[in-house]
Length: 253
Image (cartoon, rainbow, N blue to C red; front, top):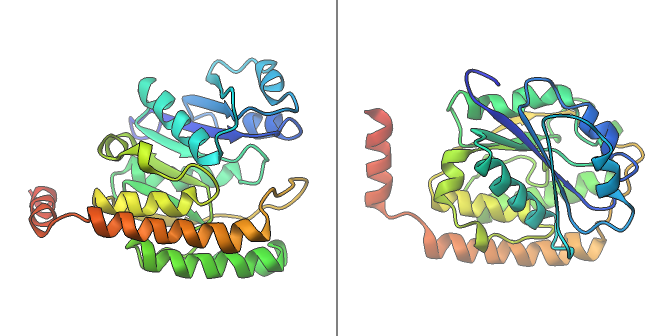
């Protein structure tokens, strides 16, 4: 726990048998719940996770592959049922520094934000660590996401290292969020429609043995289409001026 809040970590996993043990074993002791969602892996990821004996662990499996966003949503719902106050997301490929987790969850724990995103692009030395094509692509998609999400301050839209409050989850329609690559972009538009407060913290980018399953077509064709979908959803469901005024008054009370 942190500051009296129960902390959960969701790990969406698809064919992560190689690195899933390392990821789970690195999760800090202040985390109360670890939820691994195996998205119909074919490499024995679920069996590998089942061999670990961490009392914090909960394994959920999808019979059919549904996408990383769907795995995260399954994890959100599971952790909500288990009573977690703050739910973080870490990848199953050990690509996120566990030392950064306390900083990612802190804005949500201390109620200065409803959702916190990691920001790799502001990390000193990112040019030396992040492959050039990813660096360029992340910048382009981040610019587009700032335009479509309603959050002009977002610097690294593609970073999946996040934390969300149980309260804001209860106000969101999770069934409408895009469930594959593009989920980090689409969820921002959904947060905007419920007046979610979004913070960001610098996190260390890690690239080692993981293998990216993201094609250029997905990054530069599919995700821009998701962004158009996000913009449409946000504009159709944006809060009314009365809702914004009421929310602001409640926060000041």
